[in-house]
Structures are given as C-alpha cells and as structure tokens.
Image 1 (spheres, rainbow, N blue to C red):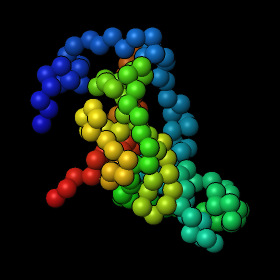
Image 2 (cartoon, rainbow, N blue to C red; image 1 turned 30 degrees about the horizontal axis):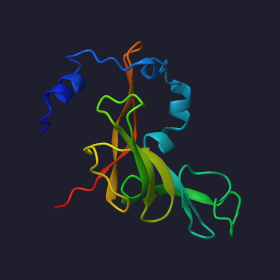
Image 3 (cartoon, rainbow, N blue to C red; image 1 turned 120 degrees about the vertical axis):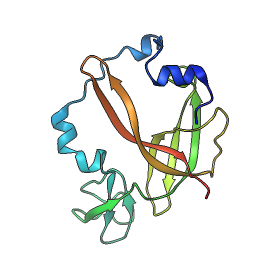
Length: 161
C-alpha cells in the first residue's frame, strides 16, 4: 500500500513531473528488435554452458568462463525465478526517476551470473550489499509519444513469508 501521496499522484499520471533535461530523450522501442530478442528481454532467458555449467545473461555464443571459452554450448536457462544478492549498488539523484533517488547496482544470481539492474520497491537507504532480491517484470520507461510502455526486469527485495 502506497503511503506517499506525491508518489501516488506521479505514478498514476495525475500530476505532471518535470524530469529535467535527462528525461527528455526519445524512448522509442524498435519493435522488430524487441520481437527478435523476446525470450531474452521478456522471458528473461539467459544461457548455461553445457560443458562447464557457467550461467550468464545475456546468452552468448561463447562461454564467459575464462577457463572454458567453449563455443556454441549455451543452453536456455530461465533467470526470472532465480534469487539474487546485491553485489554493489548506488542511489543516484541526478538520473531521472519517477521516485528519486534512482537505485541500481550489480546483482549476483544464486546459480551464477551477474547483471546490472534497476531496483524497485526500495526506500532511500534501504539497500545493503548482500541483501536477497528477486527479479520482477516492471515498466522501465514510458514512450508517451507513441503510447507504449517498455518493460524489463528489475530487482526487488525478496518478500519474507
């Protein structure tokens, strides 16, 4: 439940936000590229080397393990259900975010692999190295000219049951 009224207004488009110069870039999505990479982008599918077991995102032709380097051994590996821990992070007040500051950092997946990710559902100062996170599919950016929302995976604190 959202308790910050200004955030509620901004997230529901009820108040116009001034994002400054950094938010004025054209956020057009190349739909052909999105379609071609839909498994990776929407399905959050990475790769796992069939020779050494190294997990990586995004999937590539060559294994990233420096001791392996095998070619064409990547098998699809679902990353969305994998838990992750925070390796490093920052809170940036200069980057445009509808809910400043913009939190992002390096997450390390439990099965292996790392990626830079935006953080969501965190309060300012509520992130620490080693915290457990999960990946959630959220709006990354809104293309208001074309009425199209870009979605991608963001890291959110793991909900404790």
